[in-house]
Image (tube, rainbow, N blue to C red):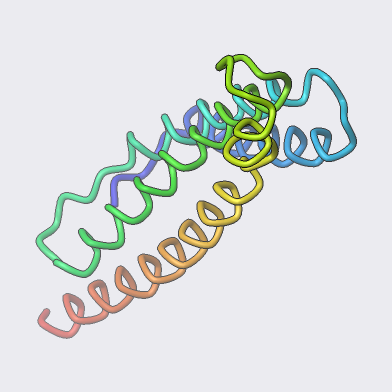
Length: 137
């Protein structure tokens, strides 16, 4: 995996912290929370898009695609947070509550599980790859 620079790593970590703060503050009904979460999600996902895998390991490529899917779900969670602030789509009240209201929690949960799994597995696969390449030398 391509390593991020120090500045990019800082943006990555600050983005993750803003996502946690935004999600937690949204549960406490703090009105700027979706904005905090959205800025964090944009920073976090943009830095993950910059981390590329240049190798040919199929497992790592598959896990990388899972990680990018979770990034998309983080961004969808941010969008749904804004939509949960009010019925901006003009739906009936029943449809709004059924399909939109606080559904960001579900997408955030799925994204976090995918992110944790893929990050853990990529780390193990990269360690295996490094170990096998060191044995060849």
